[in-house]
Image (tube, rainbow, N blue to C red; front, side):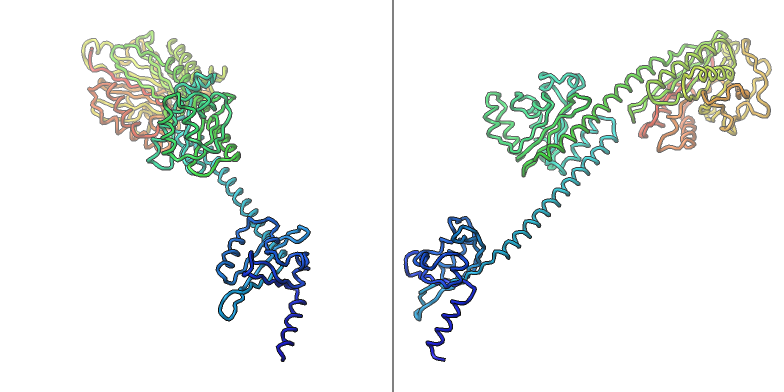
Length: 625
């Protein structure tokens, strides 16, 4: 084919193609356009006569902030082939995406004479890709929001569970700070006002003494974080985020922490350098603080901070929710503690002063539970009766609140009245039961009442002076008897031998004994026959069992409530056996105080105490003194 024909065919092809072709001359200033095919005119809207002699940057229409332009310029300067996608503009100002491929043209000497450009309108392709990118980013953001929301909900659930698991303020807030870090903060601090400050929330109280609990994800920085928070208490209200929150009761979001700005604000205070230095060492960038609220009162402040990024309004809402839950936990703990204090004070005020009785020595302990803020209805009583005998009682009212403590006092007073009238133990309990049911004094209660009299004649002569005991039980645990030979047994449990008083005993003044119930050994009461509980009904429907026994001189008797021998980790039968074995370690000559101390130490030390404990121990003396 002749060369001239070949050139014509190529020229016609360039004129007819839909692809844009351009030729520029880098040998001229600014590498101007010297030729373009008709497709260029159709795509850009520019006529060739308008653009010949101009650099093709006119297509950018001033939109020079495109990273691809730097790549294009570098390729042209290096004289190499380069392909970029640019955002260009047509003559009417409408944008389009232009895929530009530029190749150098060399002469026989290897010098660049021209650049040939091939331009393709890829707007649809680029727009589709941008839409895919937008959708992907939107999905990624939504997934991130969902994950953050899920994490926040899980944190709130975890915090609620942790706070509800304790009634100790310090332990609750320590759990809170450790739950927040590192899930929602790099470090967390809680400021708690004393109860008196929480009542009014005045400026002076907000800046006054407070309890601070701090936790940092880096153990090496915890002391620094705590020190920074303690210094906050000394700042003026305008500069201290914590004081501001305590004073106003409104949350504060610090999207950016500026140590130098704080330094300038605090310069007259004299502590600026230390505080700013601590904040810089912690590397904090953002913080949020919110009040601990309960029943409209500010009880303290929660502070969360990060060493990177910035907190947002969502984080502020999370902090507010945490603050409300922590405030409620503090308030509940304080209410329980106040009720516990009132109940315990009431209960202790109702416990008796043990009188001195000839021939008997007593020791007693009342131990409120430390596991919760509740107080039970455990009680005991010792009274000197008109006939010279001793009335001894112990009981437990169902419930763990002020009502139980008050009911305990009522039962104790009523029992004293009936015992003082000289009634037998079974009758005392039956009458007590009827009165409790009639006046609805208590729901249910256990009680054991014993009438004990020492052989006065033998005691006066210096001889061994046994005591005679008659008792009745209303569902209470059996007494423990420790004999002078060091053996301990539970009275009223199977296997306890009956012991009836010999002729001439009991001494004068003893109420008529009457026969023991038919077929029942005097000290062999089974657990099924321990007597109906006070308040359970059935009083007077059948005779309440009554037992009697001689207590040898030098023997010990122990009465107790169920908190001593039963808990979540101690079965009742195991607890009773453990009590019996511990009692046998006691030297009888050491007296009831040593015995009670031994029982308390070995039964309760190192064990979870789930209930109040009352213990009454007595010893039958072996001679006058």
